[in-house]
Image (cartoon, rainbow, N blue to C red; front, side, top):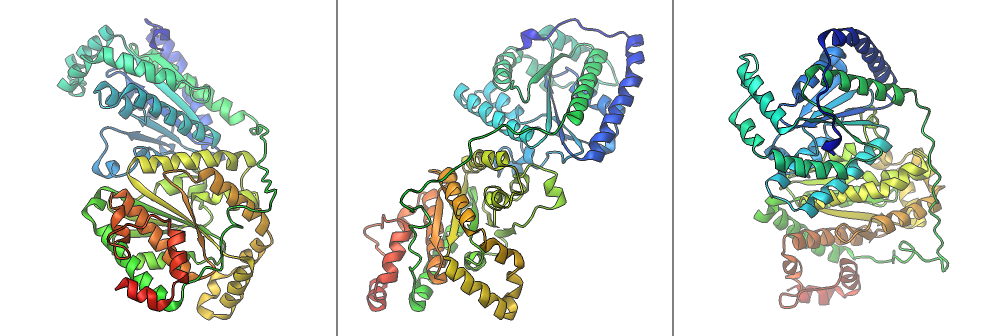
Length: 531
């Protein structure tokens, strides 16, 4: 890819001075339009060889544009806080909101290139990271962002000369260290790795722009003109016409689906419930205090029908843990700050550190549920959200996060009973709104959306657990048992999850079957077996 970069470009001082005033004025005008419209964010990546002028170019952009509406993020080695989360976490939380320009000095390309140069990852792993980045950038563009990626190129001889020139000038000598000279020795390896990586990520929606970095004036003028042209084009283009897609049409010929097959009559008597609740809460407390859990984190995602009992289940989980160890994130309609970012941004920012737990009361699945059914986003938006959500969860799991997802299902009749109960009980009245009653009118549409969600996002590493929630006792115990089994399995301790029930032979049945049998077993026999 670097072979296409032309060598020897230079701009003389007079031509540069003549071009800059008009360019600055036009950039400022475009920036004002960008800020006032707050319609799109601008992401600018500045990458390239050492000494190619990355820092100087950023300084020039600050000089030419209004610095109040520009943010620069410089990324080097990840901090301890960043290492405890998925690799993309630090980039997600640094994305500029709509109406602003975000300049990335170092980006999501830096770590994969460095790791490959140091032989920490294979070529296949590098290629997988490229595919991951392509999907991430496609998501940014689909969300309306303008993504500009600059690579400043120097020949090996040009880089050596550049470093010598900087070192010989007292004003810039501080910028050259032994580390820079050592990096020069890996020039050929960088060319090989970066060339391959950039070719794989040179997409139609976010192409690389290779700029010769030898002449400061040429480099600055080129970047400024490209940024201006891209801003003008993006700000004046008409509203994006959506590409027609084949809609999802569920046809259950026999009337059966994953929700209709749930046995909502399952229940646990109060005495059994108290015994099982205490057991699984104790087990969860042990698991989150296990020394091995300090190297993992846990994300619990709760979705369900209105009045299905999510809050009560979450409280039973919290009771088993130290309040300093977990955080409950209630998800409602996005705020103005959140609407200025990609839809997953507000969930990325809440991912927990290692040894911590995040419990989401409503989740990133809102886009394929309420936003889909209520028409709060376009069909294209919620259709592509399935892939984006799967990518999000895959990145969490790849970083060691244990992801457990619950859907709580109740019948329409039980929901109506709970709605009326909430209206009668004073301390529960705040839970019922006109929107809850209105949502009941769209029950069938929500059921279809739920079935599509489960089918498209229940993966091997992040499956959905469907909870029969007509009986709160049964639902809470099933949730706690499932959670314990998933955490224990992740800690390679699955055999201990059922040790109190069968110390010699581990129970291999899924949570639903195990609890179903408990619900049917006579209380006397259950008490005897537990002894």
